[in-house]
Image (cartoon, rainbow, N blue to C red):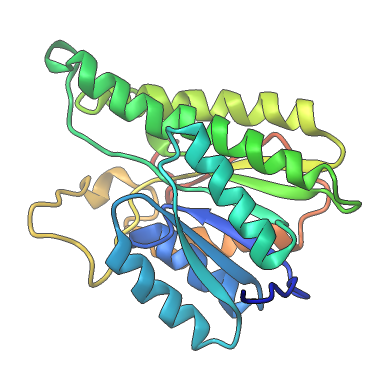
Length: 248
């Protein structure tokens, strides 16, 4: 049997960390010297590729399957991380589904799928991971990737918008429940363009509706996430909007 070696580095778990913004967040933590756990559901090949990229940065990384809507899978993922690394210092709740689904055309199945993943998944994963964090002297950090859609009414993406609004309130409730041992904050991105990963059918809001007149880059989000995970000592229960002034 392979002997498990506890990590001497801090350990971050990134849900939905195989692709797009989650991948960029995972790579940013690797650059900062974190050991990284990619929690994935359907993106197994991408998760393996991302793990390879992370290991090239000289840190340890694993990919663990976990459907965040199923508590037993989340608990199994957490148990695997503890066996492998012995600790979890930071949780980034990034896993989410973004579907076009206007109010009158939203089926119960679509509603359940989106809300269960985007909101229940954050609740379940945070509950399971915080149990581990609270047993540690230094507690931990939880960072929820919300969305500008949680602050604005995106009527064409109704279940997504409602679920992300729920994440904002969940962030505040969790911050109260877990203080002072664990800080909990949310990041709400606007339009972030994923260079090299965008598909042809992606339609972005007009630049003229953004005060800074441009779209965001992944680093606009990852820099903030790293700050909340490593530097910030006196921020909790907050939602920080990264949208170039679109919400204003």
